[in-house]
Length: 202
Image 1: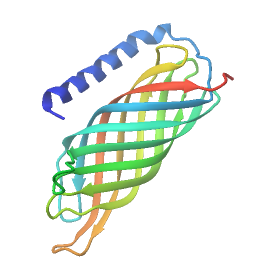
Image 2: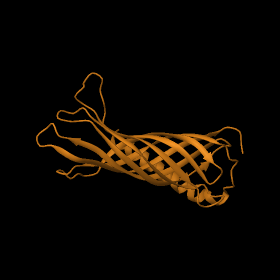
Image 3: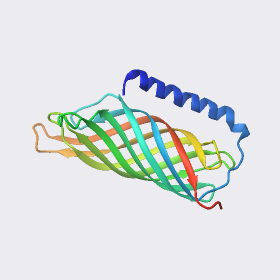
């Protein structure tokens, strides 16, 4: 993802956040539908570290899918599949490509009645793939925490700017010299999510 496109994504997310603030007064309590799915797109600032190496935050294209079942109008449970691309993969060149992804169980809580602000928390598994020369794959535990504001577009569709922080372990690599232990990642991301609610209204 090039810098101009990355800046455009950040600008769009900022505009969505601004529109959410100005739109808040006109929101009404929505009809609650039991199921929901979402597509998330945005920009992440990711840092990879280990016991031997520090790291700096680097921009990474962020893409995710989320969905689950609502618990009334105050919370919803779901599954989130998220990923950050550090270097594009190429089927004709197996020596390029690097990414971090996660599969998390999440809960969104709506603390303020009639206001679609939600707080998100989740935990699960992180996966690391590195096809670069000398790179090694890995996996470990992962968690996330964040917040969003869902703007109703229609009875079934909503648009939500989301800001969150995620971190986790990527495992050790001991078959190289020097060994890489305590590999970790952390990422701050800004995303826009399109959410579809479906099922018989409650």
